[in-house]
Amino acid sequence: MTKHQRCHTAELTVPSKAELAKLFEDALKENYAEVQCTVGPCPDLRKHGLVCEGLGGKVEYADCGTVLKSMFNPDKQLDVFTVPATGETFGRKDAFVIGSGAGSTDEFVVNSEWCGNLVMKDGVVQENGSYASFVTDMSVLPEARAVRKCNKRGEFGTIGNVLFTDGTPGDVIIAKARVRRVDKNWSEDPHDQEFIRILRTAINKQWPDAKDHVLIGGVMVVVKGKTLTHVMPPYFPPPGSKPGKSWPDMNGWSERYFVSNKQLIGCTTFLNHQGAGLPDDLKWRPDHTHFFTQDESECGHYHHDLDPDVIEYVAYLVPAAKAHKVELVSASKL
Image (cartoon, rainbow, N blue to C red):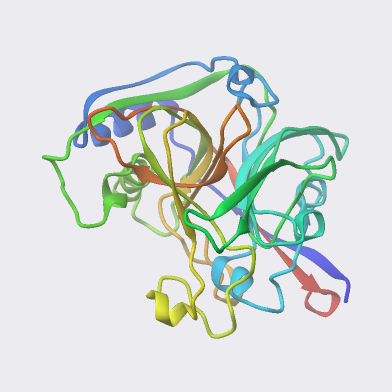
């Protein structure tokens, strides 16, 4: 059955970069020993392996599929989006596109992680620096995995959280933090002191009303330190599984976790809350960060650091003006 893309658009609240920088600095100081957040020119992102120079110009966000209704839905697990077709649903033909999602089953056959990094012009992918990672052998620990460059079609799988910019030079929020303070705000959930979670929590507290959607995206670099990452199994969650449940309730399906000691180049998006106003009980994804390494040896989903005395981050961030919820549906649901 042929599926078509359906799009619902939300106008976003767009705080100034200066306001966000101050907010982020105050939040990070509660958790890191050394923090600096400023507004300044974006460095050339190509030195980090991105395919465009900056994050300037018109900033929009596309949230494609959902974890529960797509990844955990057997009828939608094989859905494949393309960046050009996704951009076309909201009139975007030229863009530098970064993001996090599942890899295309048309391209890699198995379930995989996708870190998007591409540029398109006139609705055609001109350069694709995206990577996908997938587990190749589940019989050993840690599981064997592979990293592959993606083809020029600009595909990703059943879920994706994607930032569209013009890729031009311009001012960004530059957020730096190093040495996580384990003496402060300790939690049994290590994600509570995770760099992106702290920033997302800060905008949630500042703009708690559901009508004030604030969405931030950009590039997060783990400069040094150990991090916990995951790659999904090469198969999809079995019927009856639900996200967030314990291992037995997942029918044996679970992410495969890895420890990285390398500099990670992360593509991230996060917003203040999942919001309201979308049809069919759909929600915005709160945050999503995937990464690659410049030596092409690692790619996957970033969780949190494991090395508080050493860890160091720098992020280049911009607020988006519009968010688009994009679904693949049958013609009868258009």
